[in-house]
Image (tube, rainbow, N blue to C red; front, top):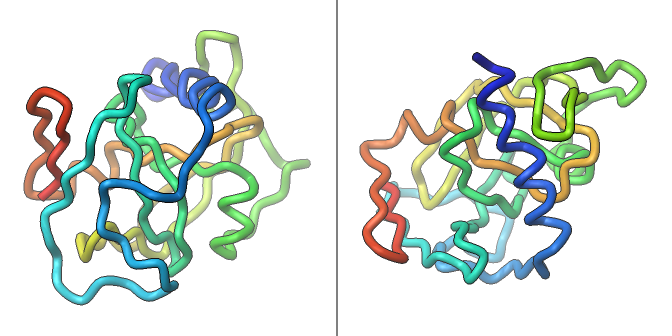
Length: 158
């Protein structure tokens, strides 16, 4: 099952490669490296690519994500994992799933905290993926929210 859901990873990588990444999103994440105090609703606007992007904190560091309802776990690029202080070793990467292009290589890691506008999840399993161009905010974070709703070109996270 993990392999089937990780099928979305190459798509996320392609999106990240093909789209210019802006650190400005519809999310109200502050520019500082602090976490939000009180949880609040997050409204994201669909990009022309058809995807929803946001910034969230991982271990109190700002990471740019595509919200990927098809990804099982939060998946980080190698650069984002380093920025968040997550220890991993590319020489220890192994097959963690199967995507459209074949085997997906990476390493499972622990994320102390993921915070989007005060909606915190602690002690999450994550994965650092080889070749990933933009980090993926996956189901192991999203299912802890009160709700994820898409209405037209707006995604609301509660």
